[in-house]
Image 1 (cartoon, rainbow, N blue to C red):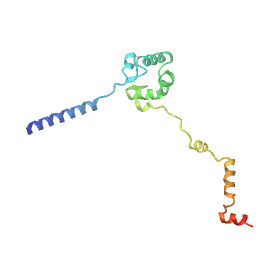
Image 2: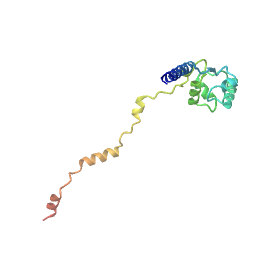
Image 3: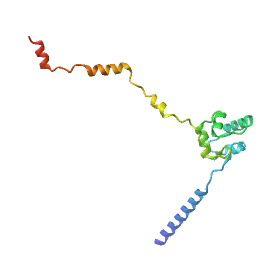
Image 4: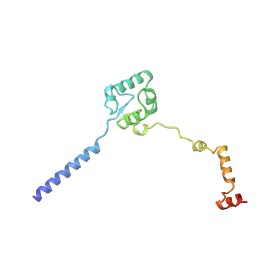
Length: 149
């Protein structure tokens, strides 16, 4: 009984280690967008026949793609996120993989952000000033004294 337990445990450990080894050596096939044919492009997860045809047509018409930004601007129906996802799934552009997938976004200047904060209008400033200049409220007793002869 105890021997069967150890044998089962040993088989499980061997199978687990073998599975981890196989998963660690698994690599996504790299497909270069500028040299791939229709079948190779379709092998990339997230890239179907219509997008593959659009890529091939654009490449034939205007030449090879320079980078991820060039790909998504030239091919209709493929946005930045789609290009990034396809590059994570093995698509390369000029032998650049996922590291070159992200397109550069313009960096916003912090000084511009600070300027966009609304300053209080002059009307609201005047209201605040009037509120602080108002006479303090009179108590009920002082009001009664003034009204009494």
